[in-house]
Image 1 (cartoon, rainbow, N blue to C red):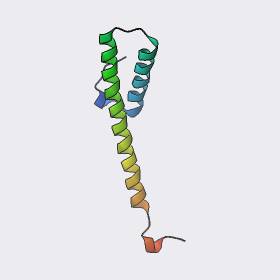
Image 2 (image 1 turned 120 degrees about the horizontal axis):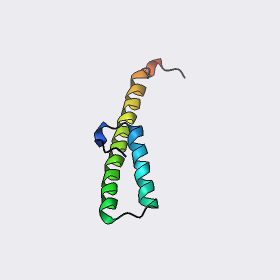
Image 3 (image 1 turned 180 degrees about the vertical axis):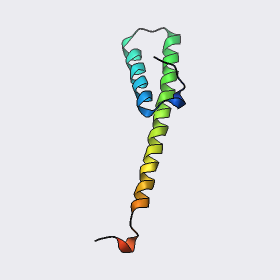
Image 4 (image 1 turned 135 degrees about the vertical axis):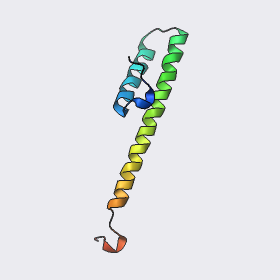
Length: 76
């Protein structure tokens, strides 16, 4: 697992790494330091994914608003 900066990852990359971390934490017997390191990385990845999703949602909302017709031109 490459330890690139979380902010440089795409949503897909961050989510895939997060899934790997969850699987490792659930299936492997890790010492406390390893578990904490993975947990911290997972928290950062989760926050990054949430930020990217919020940004995408705002872009979609903006596009919808830009493409709406003024109310007096809307079809019934």
